[in-house]
Image (cartoon, rainbow, N blue to C red; front, side):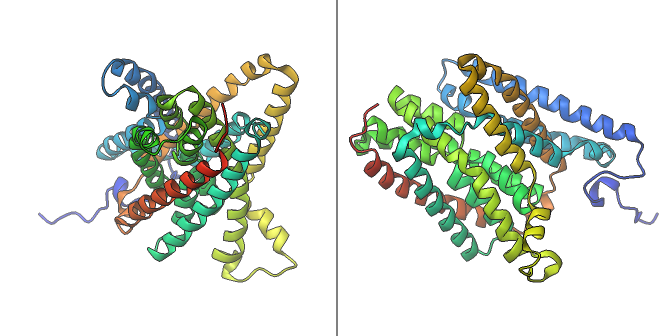
Length: 379
């Protein structure tokens, strides 16, 4: 009996929806994403509760939803592929839609008036640190021979604010889903040990509360991990760490605009040719990720709303925050569902090396800036 040459649909079929499939398969795909998102939400609260009072309590509280969402998505990917139905359901794995909607809603949680709260030192540190670390990581990624889009994701995540910045960068440079999943995994992998490492180093070096908070907020790449690490040092350090991290978050929109312009005119110009001066504005607008404008608009509206309504207005943003989390969870479960390991085999260990060296550079530069800018700063 001869070996069949028929290719299994879930092995070689391209990602995305099959137009020949009935619409209800896409609807079932959405149902799978929603179910996995609900399980992610459950684990996000159940795991810390179960770890309470144990040595893993700090780590459990710092693990954010991208970890659970991607792992569940990968597990479901394997199961559905084994059953031969993953491609049929792929029309419901709307990663791009979920990411862009979640990012627009994310804007409602990044208030522009944080600049007033942060004052000069936090703003100056954010600008100097983000610029230095981004450029270093971009240069280092080039030396390691990484793809420009992966370089952009790594540089944005290390320098600005981890997973959220990677998502914004991915939309700006049209990165592959596998590259975003890879970057998000590295962010979590490096953030968790930093929760305990930085407070320990703070005590050894002898930083004051403000310097410690500025160093922690400028280096750890996830908001939950920043809060956990800052709380270990103390309330004052936690406050400064949160302000510094929030100040860096504002730079996501700026980075997205600059990356879009760079990739439009230098890395991947339309048609593979240099864009003429007469068409540069139109080209930039056509390729600009419009969700960034939604992000900025949501931030402005939220800032005006809170300014006008006070504490009641801040409470009213809880719905937007909850929706943001649901859409981003759906995005990461979809990434796991669409993940293809073959597309990352060629990358190997190099992104890990770049990320590790960039993190070390971030620690050193961040320590210097925090020590200088927050010397004598009281909280």
